[in-house]
Length: 146
Image (cartoon, rainbow, N blue to C red; front, side):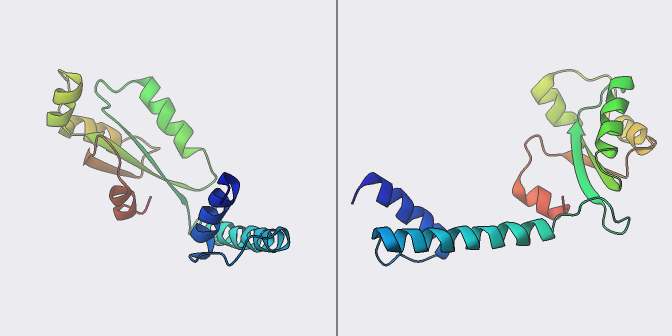
């Protein structure tokens, strides 16, 4: 089997979850059109679940994280920009915990309680998560519906 047919065969198995029957020129075109149609349907289904930010009852959930030590105007501007990405946004801000921040970055000036309290009073922030993971996982995103 040629390299092109092997790659095509792998893609089709991923899309159709089965081995394609044969890849003659006629079948390849037919299967390619079916694959394109199925891919288009999958993309449409995924897009249907993504909020556009126009409905106040279904805001776009945006996550931004950081250390936020010595909170300053730059932090506020980043959060403002995140909040204004769509018309209706629910902004979740993650604050790294003291222990992990010290391990990864070094000394901090403000403890996590102080950093969280400042962010809770920022008008752009809807929710604060502390401590947040240093590296985001799919489980974390699913848990917080992000």
